[in-house]
Structures are given as structure tokens and as C-alpha cells.
Length: 347
Ligand SMILES: Nc1ncnc2c1ncn2[C@@H]1O[C@H](COP(=O)(O)OP(=O)(O)O)[C@@H](O)[C@H]1O
Ligand SMILES: [Mg+2]
Image (tube, rainbow, N blue to C red; front, side, top):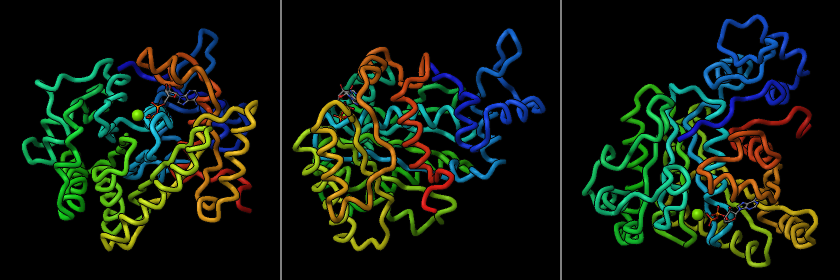
């Protein structure tokens, strides 16, 4: 896959909350790799350099074992777009020492289509259903996107419609996604893999299994080591709020039913906000008016932008070619998911 563009000085200055000239001044003294223009101006900060700078400046927590899962029961809610955008956003700021893994569990395989430019053939590629049925190992289902960048994908195809059949007993639901993630941690020892999980729009056992795994791992790793986040994207229409409420209830039910005592962080966000549409603002209002969901609403709103379908169609993201406004929204959301708090927020 093609790499997204390098991080900008302006973006770094926003995270560090210092002026752009001050950041440029600091970069003058660095011996780390920078992308320079003909006039010797810094035009981009490669991922190794930016991850080092952020680590040294109090943002080491970005590089925990992150698991980011997108979930709602409504199709066309931007789950895939969100996971793809967050993956590419994180790719720009993380070191290649830590693997980045997309896990595709939707049999529609739309993220495969974007990331690989094709949906793998069912005769040739083993997928999650084979792993959950214990007919494939992690190495069979995990394929490199880009070996030198340490990016990977667990692809999907239509055979994953049987994913829930592979998870019919409670024991399987509680254990299988957990086994997968632990296998990933074993395969990449002494690193912090970040896993981005795209799910199907349904009340499914597989999504439940992933959420349970994310919750159970909270008993194994401390918050300094591990960051599990369930994102619930909302599209601007009348059914999406109901869908969000159902998705949220289901998340709580599965965790309680299985007697797990911890819950991943939840971020509900508007995934295609159009301020010209009154429906968009109405949804936002009802979200803040919802007695339960209001506590989980993200600070970031994702704007409607033709760049999302356009870039996906070209197997790229909103961080490729140029910095788009919707890219900057997704970057803000990513930072929020990673635990970043804006200066002056909450205080
Ligand atoms: N912010 C946005 N602005 C415009 N179109 C969007 C936005 N987010 C998603 N889309 C488009 O909406 C459609 C559904 O998004 P997708 O991510 O495939 O949803 P899901 O995975 O929930 O089914 C896609 O065509 C996608 O390009
Ligand atoms: Mg999808």
C-alpha cells in the first residue's frame, strides 16, 4: 500500500501546544531524519522522527497496545471509513518498531478492497472463520500490507458470513478473539502492536467476542500499557441514534453476561456531519440529550466530505496526497482515542 503523507510541523505544533516557529526552531537542532524543501524548510516529519519527538515530549502513551474497534448495528455508518482513516492517521505518527494490524471481520470485506485493492479469493486465502474453527493459524491469516513499514492485515471475504457459526458456544465467544489477540502479542514480542478492527453491522457473536477480549485484557495489562477503545460512529439520519443506543446496550450486556468486570473506553461520534443539514444538528442535540450516551460523546465531529469516498476508491486515505479537512477531523479523533487531552480542556 502507498504511505500517507508525512506529519506536518503545524500538526506537531498543535499537539505540543507551542507555536509553529518554536517547533521549527527545535527541529533545527535535531539529528533525526526530516523531509526538507529546496529552501531547507521542514516540509514533513517522518514517522520514526515524530514518534521519537512525541515520546520525549510526554506522549509516550500514544504507543500503548491500542485496540480500536468500530461497532454499530447500522450499515453505511462509516465504520470502515473510520477504521481505515484512524489506521492511516496512526501510521503517520508511530514507529515501525510496533506493528499496525487491520483486522477485517466483515464478510463484505470493504476494508480489504481499500487496503489491498481487492478482496482476497476464497480458495486461496484463509480468514478469521478458519482461525476460529481452529483450521488455520495466525500465520495463515495474517498477511503483510507493507513489510518494511510493519503493517499487516487479517483479511476477510464472503466465507466470514459463517463467523458466528464458528462461535456458537459461550466458551468460544469468550475465548476465540482473546486467543487471536494473545497470539498477535506472542508473534510480536517486546513490541506494542496496535490493532484496528472493522466489524459487520449486526448484533454478532464475533463483534461480541472482540469486545469481550478487549475487556478481559484490561485485567492483564495496566492502563499505562494497554488502551482498548470501542468507537461507535453515527451517520446523520433518524435511525442511527437508535442504532447507537442498541449497539451501546449490547456492549454492556455482553460484558455483564460474561461476568467481565472491566469495560473498554467508548467513543460515540458523528461520522458525517453536515452543518447545512438540520438533521445533523438535531442528531447532535439528541445525542447530548441522551441520559446515557451523552457521557460517551467524543469531542471531535467528523465532517461530511467527498474526500472519503474519493480517496477510498483510489485505495488511499484522507491522509494521502494532501491534508484534507476531514483528515484533520480524523486526526483529532485519533488523538482523542489515544488519550490526548487538549490544553485547557476539562479545566
Ligand atoms: N465523512 C464522510 N463524508 C462523506 N462520505 C462518507 C463519510 N464517511 C463515510 N462516508 C461514505 O459513506 C459510505 C458508508 O461508509 P462505510 O465506511 O463503508 O460504512 P460502514 O462500514 O459502516 O458500512 C461510504 O461510501 C463512505 O465513503
Ligand atoms: Mg463496512
